[in-house]
Image (cartoon, rainbow, N blue to C red):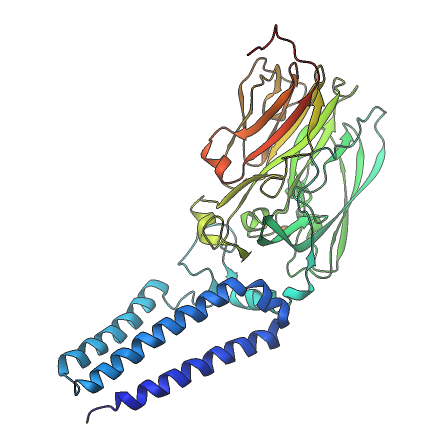
Length: 430
Ligand SMILES: [Cu+2]
């Protein structure tokens, strides 16, 4: 018996329209207009693709009907449908069907970078509830003042917050943060201080978080003692035994997933007597963002665990987003400048360089008290590591900060230091 493709083609159109409506209604029920607005570009893509596919199927079904059901055409249609189904089944598999993104097995000590589908749905359901941060970037000038005092007992506090913010104009991302900024606030203490550290997890969070400060001597750098569920708060105490500039980060599994959502910052432990005085200090942390769409794709971009496993970030940025260091860093001719430069990782070592300047002093790997380097062009800033560089600005102009693996500038890894003052033709002339 021949199928009545003419009738079926009409039913197909109605069915697709019904499914489209159902999708939109479900989204409205789940996350309200906020969800529709956030995923409008992806939604439009899916709907237009579905419309194009439906139209072509409608055309072929009608054609077969007009040609009075030639066996070859029916067979090719059957092969197309069954092969497509098989292709999807083979490439995605069934074992990890209910996770995002889809892939096979990973081999870390904890769970892989995929999120359970339940978490993804929960995220979209609550998308309207997340705090929207106007500017995710930490201000590079927000460096606490030097610590010139005897060791003492102090208290520090941070709050983990999951927020929505733009990583570039028109492109938003679900950042996980310390205090709603990336990197988290720079902390500055003194060698020998005893720190009462409190970590709070905002109640709107979907995930547990914690903090591992590389300045801490103790299990997990504080990580084990500070795992906080949404709405929870925990404290631990540590003695800062070693001076240095240290990364802190969230260490809840999957660690790399938490860090590449923005959960990193730095703590400076000053040595006895402090660091030499300078005129300007800046706080800069390189980081990577792995998002589903290609670079520059607009709208809400969700995290892509596959790209993270491939060490292929769409965006490499200083201070959380593209263009974060374009305007605020200024100095005057004659100023001594110190940059605290960290790397939140999770994949790339940074080749930190300032175009048109030479670091007359580098504290390699941000060690304090050990060897220093002098007259350095580019310094290595390793993932989970840092560097301190110093130089005097001798000539006015705009100096570009880069990761000198320069294709990363196109992914966002650049900043500007604006130097004003009198030009000395003995130094440079044109
Ligand atoms: Cu976390």
